[in-house]
Length: 203
Ligand code: GRF
Image (cartoon, rainbow, N blue to C red; front, side, top):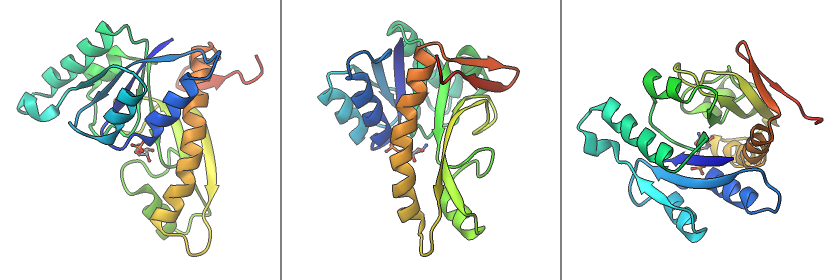
């Protein structure tokens, strides 16, 4: 399965996908990496791995979100992408784009959804006295951080945790479950039934 990865920054989750897809027998390959911000380190990671990259800079579309998303769609389609992975992509995508990639567009979010949608998830979880943070891979729907949950990993919140210390431990889990979710989807083990993703772990 050909995947496209959308980034806006350092790309550590992209790196976990690059590493996984380099393993023999992995059922997906990265066909294209797109950043909406020029010169981010994630683009270097892709280049070092020999993966084609594009910059589709939202700022060059003068506020025309539909044109920005059309450009993203055109690049992904031209590369033959079958599954789009958002990996630290910091633009909200509108319903037009999301619906064109229905059940073919996934995101990683650093909380146990549906708790803590949006930003500053670790800080909010610590301040609320939660005992677990974590991360979620989900299919994308038009509402922010919404959609059928594919995989989650809980991470204990321990005394003295700061948003940074918790983020560091959650990131270890992000890098484990994102490639795993792609592997499951690419091997046909994920089915969406209503608004639930059913994952066949045993096939
Ligand atoms: C990750 O914490 C991811 O969960 C969130 O944005 C961050 C991206 O980090 N959506 P990176 O660019 O993959 O290192």
